[in-house]
Every structure is written in C-alpha cells, then in structure tokens.
Image 1 (cartoon, rainbow, N blue to C red):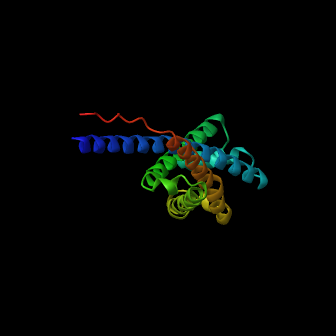
Image 2: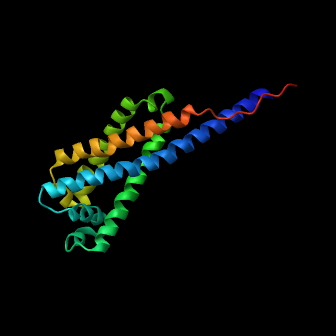
Image 3: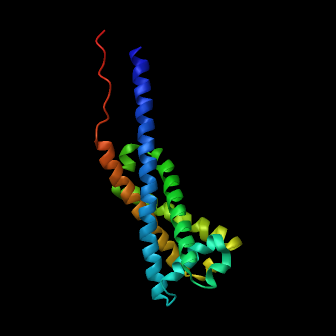
Length: 183
C-alpha cells in the first residue's frame, strides 16, 4: 500500500513539475518575444526602415503584403498580437521539450540557454527557409545571417536563460509530501 501512495505522489509531483515548466515556458517565450522585438526594431531603424516596419512584418503573417501598404494603429496591433501569440506558442513548445530533459541539465543556465539558442535557430530555419519561401517571400529580402543570429541570441538565449533560472528557483522549493503513516 505504501508503494502505491509513493507512486501516486511521484506522479503528482511530476505533473506539478511539468505544469510549472510549461507555465514558466510561456512566460519565457513572451520575454524572449520582447527581447526579439526590440532587436528587430533596432535592426529596422538601423536599416532606415523605421520602427514600425517590425510590426508590419509581424502583421504580414496574417495580413499578407497588405500590411506594408500603410502603417496604421490596426497594423501595429495585429503585428503585436501575431508576434506575442507566436512567442508564447514557441515558449510552450520549448517547455514540452524542457520537461523531458533531466533536472540537472534543464536547470543549468549555460546548457539550457545554449540548447534554447539552437531552438531559436530551428525556428528561423522553419519560419524563413521553409514557410517564408512558400507564403511570405518578403521575409527573404532581409539579411538571412542577421536574422538567424537574431533568432539565436535575442529569442532562444533569453528563452533558455529565463526558464532555467525560474526552474532553479521553483525546483529548489521543496514540495510538501504527506507524512508516512505509522501503522
């Protein structure tokens, strides 16, 4: 009977741990999204495109080429919405990946941020080299090396750093367990 209680407690702790990881991964994705958007805006301004160009690009995922006709508050709002929904989803996907990694690895800032940087590169490959080629050719007009590096350093790495730091903190707090019965 005691073994059954222990198994149930371990399953409950594992589920609580997975929920903690997934919730924090969504937040990590949003934080990575903020850092990434700032980097993209700086890049756009540096290239003489204007700060709104970043939001037009993000909005073009839903609006198509029409997002570039005129920058309006509506286009900016669509861009913000698209960008942060995608950042949260990418964070959630990373959370599922991280939840399958042993605790000592996923809580390590260096290894977690390096792995998340590779994940950022994978996002770039899928988004730019596969999806954009078929649906968003204007994404290919940008310097692809700069975009790859931006996805690694300004989305992947912040995603990994935040999630690893949160998990170090959360998993350091002991989970209360039911006291063993004295039967």
